[in-house]
Image (cartoon, rainbow, N blue to C red):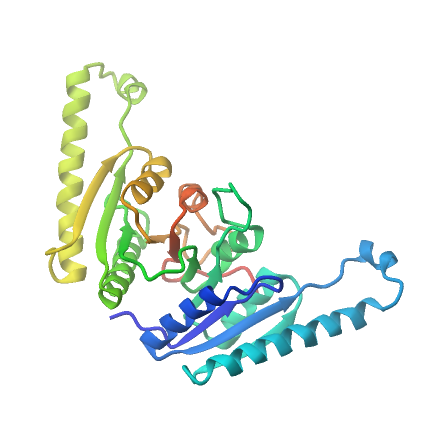
Amino acid sequence: MVTYNRILMAVPHRYAEDATIAHAVSVARQHNAQLTLFGVVEEIEKEYENWLTTKLPQDLEQEMYETQLAALQQRVADLKPNYDRVDCAVAKGIPFVEIIKQVVRGGYDLLVMDATTRHPGRKRFMGSTTKHVLRKCPCPVLCIREQTRPGKVAAAVDVFADKPGAAELNRKVLAHAYDQAQREGAQLHVVYAQQPIGEPMLSAWGVGSADMLDGMEADLIASAETKLLKLTEDVCGGSDGIVMQTVLGNPRDALPLYMRDNRIDLLTMGTVCRTGIKGFLIGNTAESILNEVTCSVLALKPEGFVSPVE
């Protein structure tokens, strides 16, 4: 069973959605975890100082700090009658840097962020701070887009991945998705997207038969389904009631499409990177998928990931 002991929720300065905070409280209650509401006051940039006529930059920053701290303290007071294990903190600086520093400093094992879009017609929800955090945060990051309890949870895995730590990351992704589905009474989907072989690749191999292409892809899918079943049985203890699906297509396109068509509420996935190497943070495919999906996302790092933020 997956257990979170300390949860940090990054609360934006201008937008602190009651529904998102309620969702974070619900997750904390499920795990009996300590929940910290965390705000960051951005430093006033040098080029703006000439526009300040009534207050010094440091005085304005301090006023903003005190205002945000008071607002979070009031939220904590409002929450405590229903869930006592909640507190708050505020820092000054660059939001993604201070958020990650707080995660490391406080030993948090889950970060919750509000990923609700506030621009009509905008499909993507990864803002600048969210992108930086997803790339560099060492603990799991839950980006909440849907405020309701998830009815369908998906685990995106790569059953043919051969990079160091890939098998462990697959198991970690599925374990978190399975635990969430069990806690919420949700349907679990385990999904693998198989990149098509493609005729240009066959030509490079000296193979030109369309029948051979179909046969190779059929063999790949059959092998993937076997691996998917074994992974599911190993991690979940069985496959009853679990939807296992191999889709043929570029993962960047196929996975967001699967999430949309199947009305997935929460996608759990790994951000593929080399462990222990600072600066090698998130794979292009993973970032493309995160940029396209419109459901909530739980993003996980491989074991041994080292954040470049210190």
